[in-house]
Image (cartoon, rainbow, N blue to C red; front, top):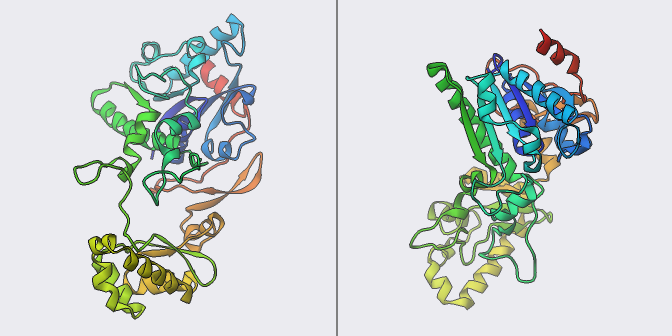
Length: 381
């Protein structure tokens, strides 16, 4: 779908790499400019993420300038190669460590002098004039600042005595990459009409404002961001096989009534539908809470999942990551694929989520400098 587009990616951090992956998955020729010493990057070749986020790309390995290489000749050569690449490309992704930005000396103004039609995507950690705008695009910093590690789904505040909940999934960087992708598509469309490129500026911190969903909702009836839970009915229950089921019944009669009929407890409907009564009568609340927990011990988690499906009540067994990846649906739909990676060998990866009739096979992440000669020939041609 994007096979006619060449993308140059200069990214030390996940957000730029993830955007490059999305574009490569859709057929774009993505050339990542990476340091000869890959340990200089936030995500190195020894990390599993590297093999996913850089699949389908070409590698052009160069000495990085500035503090890493205090040699003016290196700076000049690096910048010269970068501008040559920009001059023959349609899209440029920049997500570099801010302390090396001056040394690299690349900007939209400079890029458009060699290619007025370039679409230039600049990721920053925080927006301009933010107190932390000088910080790098590290996932932990942005997630900490944007409230991700403070989320607690079952209560309004973290459990007393416990610290933040660290999430290994790079929510901030992933959301930034997803946010940037349609912006690139819009810029491509506009360019097809006007013939002009443009600068797309994206703060990874700000991208999270649209990624936090109900956590950010505020109105006169609800002053916090957590979903208000039912006084009795919880989201998770332990089942007969010691596994957990997740349900979304709450006080919604369209789900509660068929469920209570299923378990032969329809007499509870009136009480469980009256949240105010339950809140005011703590003894009744505690009694029903214990009785409701007992119900789930009668079946295994997968039996409950099937039973709930039959009556149209949302609920699913809590699966492990391996169970999720190895499900028949994931394999047959190629949502999970096998990739023969140069570093790790055979590995499972998430497949291409958006599929078009023009999609080709996904290729593994390139070896360091694998395409240097090809790209040098391109630059000298």
